Image 1 (cartoon, rainbow, N blue to C red):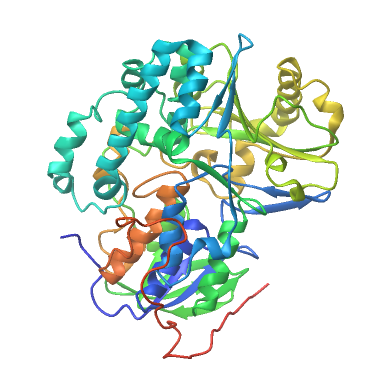
Image 2: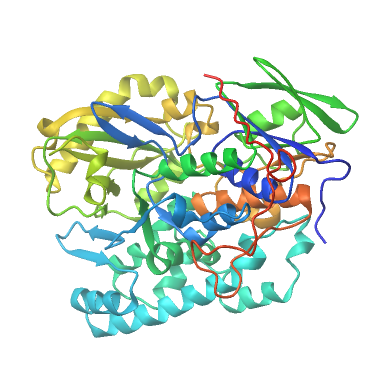
Length: 529
């Protein structure tokens, strides 16, 4: 049985209104807790924020949404449904992969469509290999979903269950790239089903095969896009939480925690003091540990994932070869990962993610205009260029990136840009992200499962961590689960799970009463600019 917070937990303060904090808030409200959310920014979202310039509506964080049933669990906790709050549009194809040899492959999540595409691209033998790979990914997800992704760990002994044996028999403790290679001979196809390891901050040849579950989410379960952009998701979560009694204090920064013995008694902000019975901390780990006044001892310092340069470009035209998400692979592969994770060099032959959200939602740009998001992975500031270096490097890197895109078929992109915003590791550092990366702590074996920074901190009885630095990890679905797990540490209840036959948007049996009072109690939302 996992540990839970002891003592009173009637009023919980959640620090941070990102996806983890909002997920925790909804699950806490559903369990009858009163919740106050403290957010330093003027609106919710955290990493999944919103930037507006030149008439363009830009998502500043994740652009890929998978596993909407996990989002729906948070809404279901208060008797709401995702489908009533956000319109999710299936992205088809999920990706378009373009390779250095000029070939291209559309990645479909429908099995028959993808099998036909693989056969067209690489022949019948590879199509059969894809069928086997798809089956393995599905079994891997089923083995991990309930016991590893959606579970708290109090010690490594928590792993000792029949599910661990099942995962081992599936090859989950081998290497991701080698496991994919068992099914696919074509090196280009292997990239399509292993590039996701970069989300985990590890190269495919070194990443545990267990993390191929990310490829299941991307290439099997389906990719979606919320109408209004990814920011529509945290906005809807915050609105729903407010309707059910959560108090939001925007534009307010947590500065310290008051403590009596091993209990946090209040969160002190730059604008006042908020008493609490328990607290959920979602900032970056160094910030959370500083607030707590203590950090867990680890034999080796935490390693962080690579960072990224992101160019948001509003253009007066677009290019037909682009899909909603386009993977533009360079010729190099393993050497690129060595540069990103070991030598700290900028990619000599970059692989890029190009997202054109106006493919699915033209309203994100002015009429006749198009929004392009170019993500170029780069080393974090712990092993690569530091923040000061990026001051001079940024404009040169931006120009080189545009020349490379022009060479890869986006002819004239530099002259097509009418509004833009460039983000570098220096900017991520300025936002408080450790090692200048928004992807947090990498998923090496020593930072996985029970070895990852835990969401309970020794010496503090009523504080819980949530977010991508703690369990289960990085990415939209894991971060949402981290909020759910943090709430369960406080309430002792895991909340609604996927359950048999659960579909995104399906409602649970009954609507819980608002946490702000008895039946019919008014909803109070406090917004501080």
